[in-house]
Length: 350
Image (tube, rainbow, N blue to C red; front, side, top):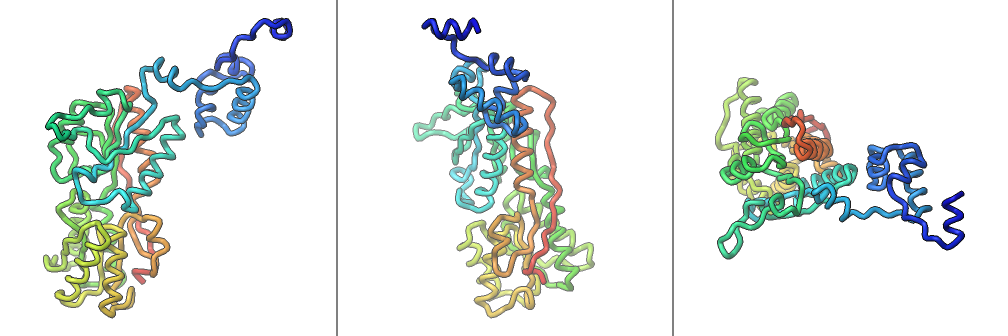
């Protein structure tokens, strides 16, 4: 009543704060902060009450003030290093699915996302090292998708900065913090599946020079050896990530290769390109040649025929990358995370 009287008498009312909102609703200030950031960690009912009272009181969050107070940017930089690695384009469906998963997880945690094609150790045209997102204060942490063939710079950068998490393969990792999939097991799963369908002349399409692809190829070899079949080097076909390049590699292989009855593709994009090449060669999928992919991107489900694939758990991977990075930013005990691959059987393998 005193506050109303002051207001009616013309005395200016003090602006509302998170503390006011928290007291009136009987919750903590941190709950109010999370609710106003749209965090899914706060129950929908509580979030609605906080938002309604904040609107009623004319309260708005001063994000810049909050960030200065915490000495944090509340931003994470996600690096898709196509500029340096140069083997996949940003429009690659795997990247698009992963970016979506990361954006969802970061938004839920109250963080903004910056997207970069340039590695944090990139050198400018003048030959000088560019300011990296951590030392410049542009971001609180960095997520890098991919390890690259030459990990020298990656290992040097992660040895200097704790707030960095890499998406990659644990078998080829250095001492850096990593979230990834058991790619060797994934390659074996796809090959074992085709073997169980009675296929014996199985080719592998993918570039074994890439860290993660090399492990998928090793899994392919493991499964053949376990089935008592020899590994034929002629059936391991280097194929790049780009659909046109993958299509060209598959066509050249089919023109020159002995008969095959199965293809283990290192990615879904390569798998779909292989199906197109098989059709052009007059071969039926899966009747003549069964095909598997890897990634379980959205377009694999709508392909014709729908592509059997190995799921990396992209949504789970995005969530674990964010959880792991935020734990590192917070200074807690952090460990890498390994996702078990899962076979998704569809029409392309019969």
